[in-house]
Image 1 (cartoon, rainbow, N blue to C red):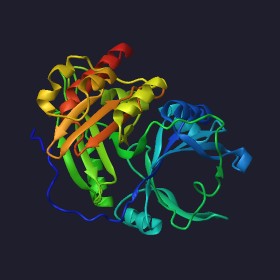
Image 2: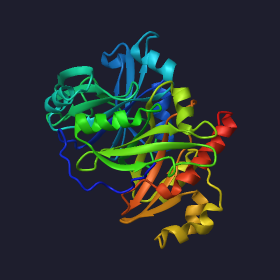
Image 3: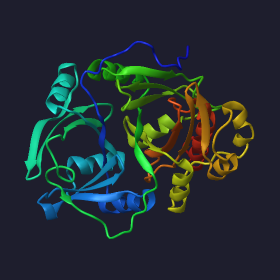
Image 4: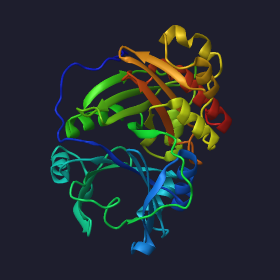
Length: 374
């Protein structure tokens, strides 16, 4: 199997402009407790709330924010709702990767005309702070994309939500924006969903990794990265590849029960400071043995940071033709071994840490072995 690791040269035009990630919504079993976890451990600030106290009887949602990252944590108040069924089947996980657009009607109608299946019809909601237009399409598994137009809205989040703050003192950890969002799909599903993003949303194929790039002695996977024209939205899509033992993608699919979001990469300008704070706050990270650091500079060359400091924090390093990057991966942030986070600092590099794949996947395999799922 051939490997393509460079950006394709042909240009593409987005089907409709995308300005960035508007929010990521999780369906969870207990939104109040989940919101406290993200405040205490990741330094998010509570900005808005929707629930019975605001006239919304069936569910509660907490909106958290840190710089340009916005999380919505939603839980059901009834046992037979779509949210309850989603959580019972999948566990806590990402339901919606919402996209900020200039014109929701154009984005939604264009996507549907190009073959997207409607998840939620185009709607307009308003209150004294203005109007939001939105509509949602289905993507892999039960994940959706909501197109959000908020140019005529000045409220804290959207109609139905009230501004809310926490009495907890919040110490932000330096997370800036969503760098990329990774989906795991079933064997044979990767090319289908790459084509979906190309045909429906006008994305370009950025990078391809095959099972020679992403493999260890025991497991392997394949991945393709699609991106919109301005590069603000990047979606790597993974599928399992044949290996001697069960890969991390297969483990994810076993526990999540379908395709879904595997991890969210969030950007920082100072990964040493960010990871130091996260570790102090109790966030668990994957462990990479010290031997990794014995030869890493031979591979990546000169860097600005103190290698001993990176080693102490277990931060990985990789380089491409544009520069280098620093990255580290949390352990899963819920009971099922599904969703986790990547903390990434780009020092010019535009790639995804190909040189770290082996060390990363061996670290994941060690966790799988402890769970008895390798």
